[in-house]
Image (tube, rainbow over all chains, first blue to last red; front, top):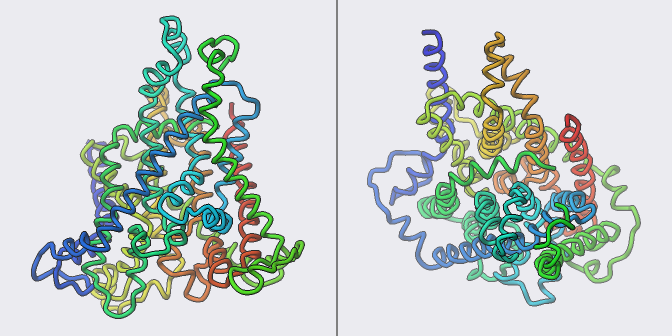
Length: 270
Length: 296
C-alpha cells in the first residue's frame, strides 16, 4: 500500500518535471503555426503552414541542403577514417597508444576558437574556404574523440571470434566487415550520430569559412536572421528553428535503440 | 591484443598501416594547428591592421596580462560558478536522480520523461538560445504564467538575472547526457547485488549511496570529466543569449576568448587565453583520471 502511494507521488513529480521541461517549446510552436505571428506568447487566431512554406523556399532551403551536406559529410568521413585507424589501434600493441589518444582528446578540449585562426590561414592557402573545407576541418577536430570511442568499442569484440574466423580461412577484410563491424554496430551508430549532430549544430567554423550567403548552413543563417534589424519575422524564425532542429531529433529517434546500448561503452574505459 | 599470436594481423601489417595513414595525416594537421596557436600566444599578432603582418615576439607579456589586467580572473570566476552550478550541481545530480528514479518507474512514464529531456539536448545551440531568450523575455512564458498573475510587474530576466538564467538554460539543455550515461551505468549494476542489500535491510537511500554509487564510480568520473570540460569551454548558448553581457556578468572564458580574439582582434592575447584554458582543463582531467584509476 505504502509503495503504491510513493510511486504515485513519484509519478506525479515526474510528470510535473516533464511539463516544465517541455514548456519552453510552447512559444516556438504557437508562433511557428501562426501565420500572423508577432513574437508574443498567444493563442493564434488562425493556424497555418505559411511560415514553414517560407522557411523551406529560396535561401532557407539552400541553407538546409548546405547543413545536410556538411553534417552527413563530416559524420561519414569521420567514421570511415576512424574505423580504419581504430581497428589497428585496438589490435596492435603500439606502446603508449592510450596516453597518446587521451592527450589528443585533451588537446581537442582547447576551445575551437583557439585553433580557428591557424585553420583559417591553412584553408585560405589551399583554397578550401568552402563546404569541403568545413567538412575536413570538422573531421580533424572530431577525430580524437571518434578514435577513442571506436577503439573502446573494438576492444570489447572478443578476439577469439576473429581467431576462429581466421582458422576457417577468412581474410582480414572479411574478419573486419563480417565480425568486428557488425558487433560494434551500436558504437558506430553513436559515433556517427555525434559527428552528425556536432557538425549540424556547428556555428563558429562555418561562420568564418562560409564567406557568401549561398554557402551558409542553417546555424549561421538563423543567427544572421536574428541580427537583421527592423521588423523581425518571428513566424519565419520559429518555423525555421523547428526545421533546423528536426533532423537531429529525427536521427536520434531512428537510432535510439542503438544509442542506449552504445552509451554503456562510452562510460568505462580509460 | 597479442601481436605474435594473431597471424591475421601480423601478415597484414601493411594493410593495417595503410588504414592508420589518413587518421595520422589529419592528427598531424591538428597537432600542427595547435602548435601554431601556442606560438601565437607569444606574439602580438592582431586580426587586422599593421600588427596582422608585422607582428613581433613579445615573450611572456600576454601571459602577464592575464593576471595584471582586468578581465581574465573575473571571467575565470564566472566560468567556475557557471560550471559548478550548471554542470556539477545541475546536470550531474539531476541526471543521476532521474536515472535512479526512472529505473523503477513504469515504462510509459520513463519514455515520456526521457523524450522530454532529450528534446532539450538535441536542440541546436542557437535554437536553444532563441527559445530561452523568448521564454524569459518580458512577454515570455515565465512572466505571463507566473509573475504577472501573482500581481508583480513583468521582470526582464535576461537583464537582471543573466547568470542564473544561462545556468538554468544549460541545465535544461545538458541534463540528458548525464541521465543517459548514469542510466546505462545503473543497468550494469547486477540486480543480485541490490537484492542482497535489500535482504540485509538496507534502506533505499543506503542501497544507492553505499551499493550502487561505489560500483558506478568509474562512470561518475567519466561523466564529470566530460561535462566539466564541455561546460568549461562551452560557447554558443551563452554567446547567442547574452554575448557576455549585461556588462561582463556572463562573460565566461570562452566568450572572453572570442571577444578578445575576434571583436578586439588581439589574436596573440586570445591565444594566451586558450593556452591558459588548456592548462586548467589538463589539471582538471588529471584529477578525474585519478578518480577513474584508483579503485581497481
